Image (cartoon, rainbow, N blue to C red; front, side, top):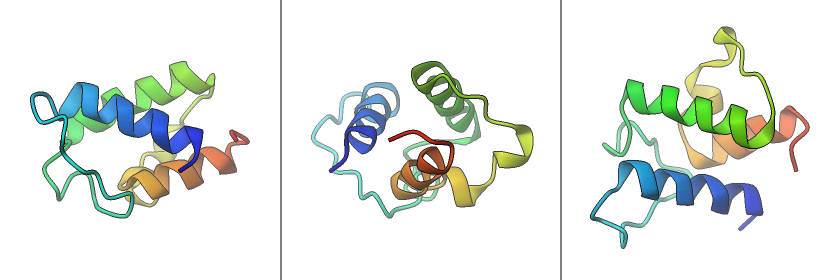
Length: 83
């Protein structure tokens, strides 16, 4: 597991899976369909990613292909030059 993936999973567990720290998050599972995050949570995640990785995420980048799963988020960050 990459550091990026670990960081994102830790953020999600701390902010969206409260009281269920033993919850397993499948990197390929939709965070919204799994009930882990809602649309407001996606915005919180975007704020976290921008602050943590010093990037700007444009409105047109707020699509499921970039943010729906942990795997998609990691790929998206790599496209933005984050390793």
